[in-house]
Image 1 (tube, rainbow, N blue to C red):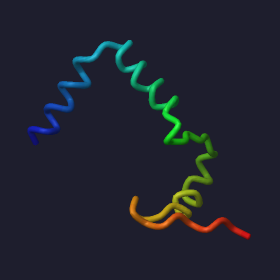
Image 2 (cartoon, one colour; image 1 turned 45 degrees about the horizontal axis):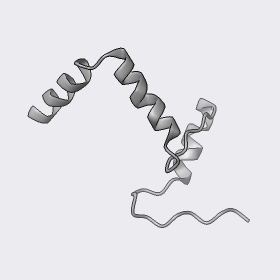
Image 3 (cartoon, rainbow, N blue to C red; image 1 turned 60 degrees about the horizontal axis):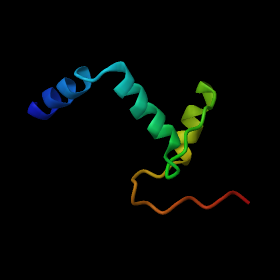
Image 4 (cartoon, helix red, strand yellow; image 1 turned 30 degrees about the vertical axis):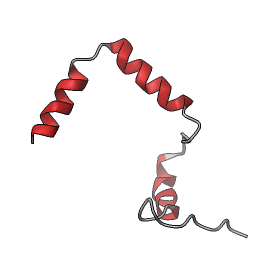
Amino acid sequence: MRDVVEHVEHYEGRSDDESAAEIEAAFEDRSQAVMVIPNDLVPAVRALLPESPDAAPASPAA
């Protein structure tokens, strides 16, 4: 429970500018991708993702 309280205190104590900077940095991170998809396709996209981060990548459809 202490970890949760520490996280809440950390994020509540930040300014709007600090929060915005973190969000912008996430979009600039080249090791990740952000995509916008229609809500009705979310279940299909999730079904394509591996169950764990250590799973092998899915083969592209032929």
